[in-house]
Length: 538
Image (cartoon, rainbow, N blue to C red; front, side):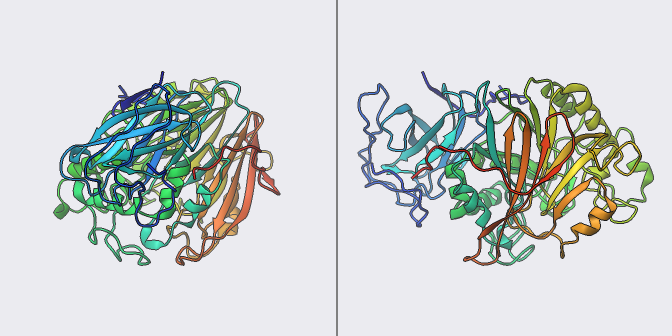
């Protein structure tokens, strides 16, 4: 029997966890229905939606639907009612095996209201593993677009595919990459590695599109308004509608170059940083379809049968000490106790790594690989600014997991492929065979945020032998294709993001790693999608 619970606890491995069908087109209404809508799908023992009051506005579901954090038997479902009368609102949801909702498996009433910005977020439980479902919401006589989601696969799953993305600055252009991902029916999920929103004022960082509000966001009301603007975007909305998302934040969900107790872009006249951070987290919990643990905790583990364990880390906020301003601060860089994950998250990670899956996939924010352009590190906001923490991470990977490890990274607005070694410039690492490497790292390009001024990847590869490929200017996403024997990352890059008519994509590169060998091998072609992918939501 399928159940439902408010998604305020956590059932994944996370600390502190306790009418007329929508078309899916974002034509400005964001909703469908005739104002006196009801669901009626036959005698399946589930309640039907009934409403005979004054209909809500046609734009009631203008922020679409979303799902996320799939487990074997559960998935988070999300929507929002917009323009409802002040006070509590009764909503209704349905989950079915088909987009026509003739095979319903769940239906129930839920409540929302101003205390959570009228968002609807629930944990649909009792589902079957490795199964595609379709879902929709009703409220005030209106019907949402139809969403499509999928539960995690059980033991014996032979293959998984996921899209990997990061860094979507609305002010720098249009979200063509989200649309291209939405069109891929063969994906099991999408992974967002942070900078889902940006906090800047209009014109403060990019000027292709203005922000709402026009000023830098600081308060809870500000963050809510910014998320609401993002979620009206048709391309982002379609990506959420077609695929479950697994997301973590980076810094811009709060403010630039954030750390545990402050941020480069937080000034004294902007109030208390702790209050700002709390507001940002509360809004993230309201608007993002993730499983909530203890307040401020987003690191968590999601199992996908015996094929892979997806471990999402917080390298940005929960345990990070302040960035060192200069490579000449030897005392800070050499501090053996310097923290990026923090002691509590490191201890949690040691336990999360003890699983029986073939692959460990770490989703996190900032580049793990050493990166030099000359004798010194390029960016001390990355793990290069926390070498002792990186050494402890590599020790954990060696000591606690029997599987092969792949690190997925965002933040830097560019594409990279690395082999990860303690000292990739020393004699214990062989760049021709990968011997001495502990893992590999794939860095996802931005959706829109700007990369380097020029593509100087060849210059980086000349100096960094563990770097196997890079594209430092173009935007797009990665498709990760996983089998028991091999894992491949293929980069798909889109055309001009500053133009509404841009967005054509091209295959740029693919690199694979085989089980038991920490060596990246270039592939001439991306892995072909499997046959028989479940239908996209109509």
